[in-house]
Length: 105
Image (cartoon, rainbow, N blue to C red; front, side, top):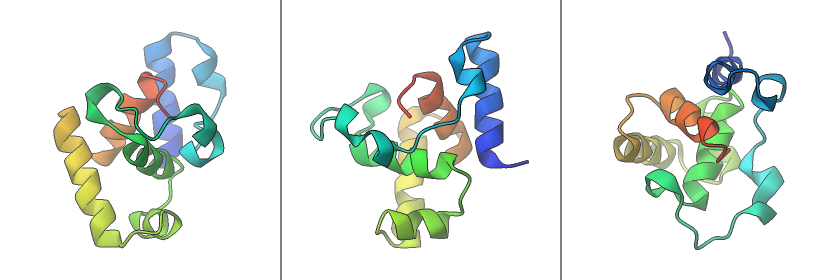
């Protein structure tokens, strides 16, 4: 099953029928105007972290996400691990679900 579909299902179960069930996650690039570069969000996530999670939420591979974010694949994986550690989750998908449930992505 596609990663983005799994995220949507997880958030729809959490939201008990809210609008999240019927919509898809919007990559952070599409809503950059909503974020201020200096803001640190819940869990210690900054704009770059949220952009990375939004990119992963689209279901692309880490190599493709890294290319889109103009990072090396190794740097992306290292940053994903750091975000997972900060949030106390085990996988990048869990981090994406965490952010989606809080309407950060």
